[in-house]
Image 1 (cartoon, rainbow, N blue to C red):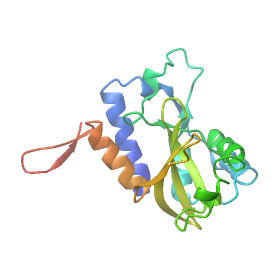
Image 2 (cartoon, helix red, strand yellow; image 1 turned 90 degrees about the vertical axis):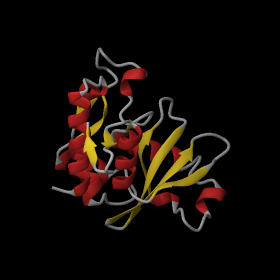
Image 3 (cartoon, rainbow, N blue to C red; image 1 turned 90 degrees about the horizontal axis):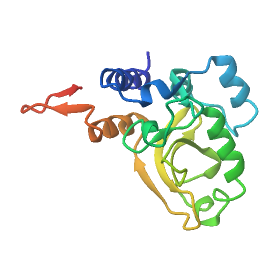
Image 4 (cartoon, rainbow, N blue to C red; image 1 turned 120 degrees about the horizontal axis):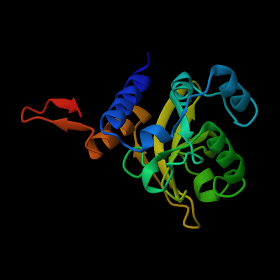
Length: 183
């Protein structure tokens, strides 16, 4: 089991234990054949194994579920996980708009062709995109999806992002000795 999958499973356990409404809204994960059908046709790169694990674990939010609402889709704080299909569609749509913007494309640390959005805010105005570096995962960038085109380095990697957002969401608490515990 990958380190990423272990953290995702811990997060899911916390969501279920605390009766978080998002727990029932998370769609089942994809199998390898489903991932390959998207990976091979809609993405400009092959997904690294850890990202494949992410989409095997769960594949976004079920917006057709009867309990769906904007408030119920919070996964970690205000972040909503994207499905692989939505991420691929975003890349296809945005590659001609935002990602081809010179201020992003010409940046020395962002190669827009290697960015995969994995989380968004409620309204699709901000994306957390992971940089794909061959078969390795790079840092996560926060990208504003508007005319401002703002982007910034948000986290060094997806594992750190999940842990820090779990702390902010009070899923991980620390005792007086500084020992962390999952709630």
